[in-house]
Length: 310
Image (cartoon, rainbow, N blue to C red; front, side):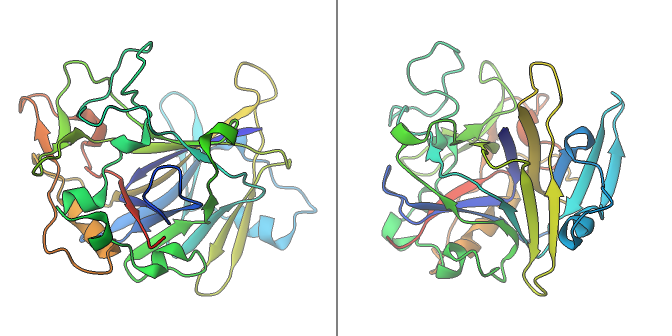
């Protein structure tokens, strides 16, 4: 069974090493931010196994929903609040990180589906925090707590379990890649404009995993009380997506913002760092004011990449 997880909002991807191909682990952390953010798990109700009389206590806990959404197209979604929680995938395999297919001088992905370089899924389109702060990697190390999934940092509201990373050549169907919700052609986009550094921003990431231990089980583990909720997934019984389940992790603001050419939430990523760099370049919109950058509006957040000590 293949599980695709779309990750959006004020989320940091912290590697234990920034050198390409050297990281052994990836940590996904949802930050509090300067304004209140809401960490959420969203799953199509058709992909959640119905309750059974013999459910364990953990599964019964997982049946308690934060909200249920009925969409105009007739689909129904379940939502769980992730505040104070570690999100786990039982039997998760090691992942590869899609990167290395981008020209160092490129500032914009190649939207041509047959492009040989600068592909939009290259993880380097997720902005690197040390570059936005204008410092070298060794001066922008993440606090040790962000590399320990047994702890939830005071600056965070939720996180994923530690993801093991292996070389991309052996990762098979397990990948972490950048994600865009718009095409790059003739669209206004948000960019960084720091000295010597300018690039389009990925507004999300996609984590794809092939889970061999069935049924697929998700766990939400509370940091304060150890309370565990287990969610059992099921795929559609037929059709082209019969072996694929798509879910979403988001950490979006609780309020809609007025039109602004900057993403002010981004300054919260400085909370990751062991030493305050004193500055952080905010992403700015490039393009006409009558065409907003749809991939981060109307509640504007974007993800970020950082690293630790090794």
